[in-house]
Structures are given as C-alpha cells and as structure tokens.
Figure 1 (cartoon, rainbow, N blue to C red):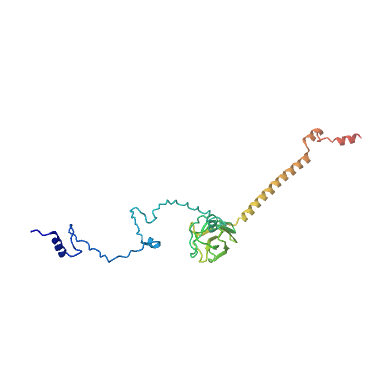
Figure 2 (cartoon, rainbow, N blue to C red):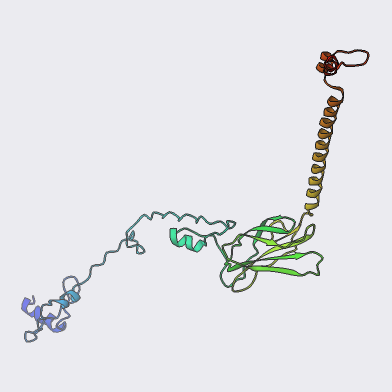
Length: 280
C-alpha cells in the first residue's frame, strides 16, 4: 500500500524543525523572515560622510620607492669654491676672512680662538754691524700681534723685547746691535689665549735663529783711503820733480838750436851783441 505524497510531506515537516531542513545538497535551509519584521532603510551618505564611508582602494606595488616618493632626480655636484689668494709669508697680507667675504673663496684651516697660536716660521735674517732685519711666515692660527725678541749670547741671558706689531706684518728690523757678537733672534705670535713657543735657534723652520753680526768695517775703509791718498801724493811729487828738473836743465845749457846758431869756438859760444859794441 502506498503512502500518499501529502502524508509524506506532513511527516517530514514534523520531524525536521523550521529553518533546519536540509536541501538537496545536505545543507540546512535558511530561516524565512517574518512578515511583520521590517528593517529600516539607512539614509544615503552624502558630503564628507560619503567620502569617509567610501571604501579605500589600496594598490600595493613591489617596485614603489617610499624614500624619494618614486621620483628619481639626478644630482649634479656643485663646483668647489676656489682657494683664497692668501700667503702666509707676504708682508702686510690682508686677512683671509676679508678675502673670503669679498670673493667667497676658501681659507686654509686654522686653529680656533681658544687655542694659543703655533710658532711662526722664521724665514731669513739679514744682519749688519749694528742691526738686523727679519722675515717670517704666519702660523695656521689666529694671531692678534707679533713681537720680536733678541738676546745677546753671554750677556747674562737678558732678553730684549721689541714693540708689538700688527697681525699683517711679516717683516721687521732691529737696531742697536754690537758688531762681531752672537745673537738669538725670535718671532713670537700672540692672541687672547697666550703666546707661541720659542726654541734654541737650531731648528731649520723654527721661530728662532742664532746669528753672528759682522765685524766693524770702518777701520779697513780708513786704511784703504789712507793708502790711496799716499799713492796719489807720491805720483804727483814724482811728476813735479821731473818737470822741474827738466826745466832747470834747459835753462843752464840752452837748446840745441841756440848752440848751432851761435857757433862754437875755443872760448865757447860767440856773443853777437858784444862784438857789435866793440866795433862802435
């Protein structure tokens, strides 16, 4: 006896509750919505709310460079400024800071203002009997002034100090020295911190130099002048004696022409004036 189709549906509806009936694929059926439950419709977004609620689309790119914003710029190196026409050894040299400000050039490196200056380099020392002239080169430091110092070796180590010189000076002279004596000359640099060091004068490029003044030359000059005057007087005396002796010889013996004109006899030369007087 066959079961009617309507009775089969009633049995199935009874066994399986609502919302859990399996489908033909074995999955439960969705629960149907009640007719009296109505969801309120949300208002459409507009303005700033629309922009905030709009989903953002993010694109990921493996080649994206986050350091330079994916902009590759070629940097051209700028040319280096030229070096200033500054010399450490030029007398009355314009400070390098002024040259750099005027032409935007680069100055050589120097120590700071809170460091004592390094020792200047004494280039040459020219000495005479009673004086000396010194030429030096500036150190790579900030210098406010220079000063010359000299000492007579063996004179109880007394150091003579010259006046302060400007920072642009590279030459100076010293007077009042003694001839044929040994001196120690030094150049000292000063700034607000202190003074540069000195040495014993034996360093080749140091700030000091040991020099001996030449001996006095005036005595030799006097001797030379005296010898020259003696020779001149002797030559003049010889010439004067020669001319005087020759004139005296002619006055006593006469000339050769006078002797021939007068004729020679036993008694000597004839006197024409005496014969004319006898005839009268």
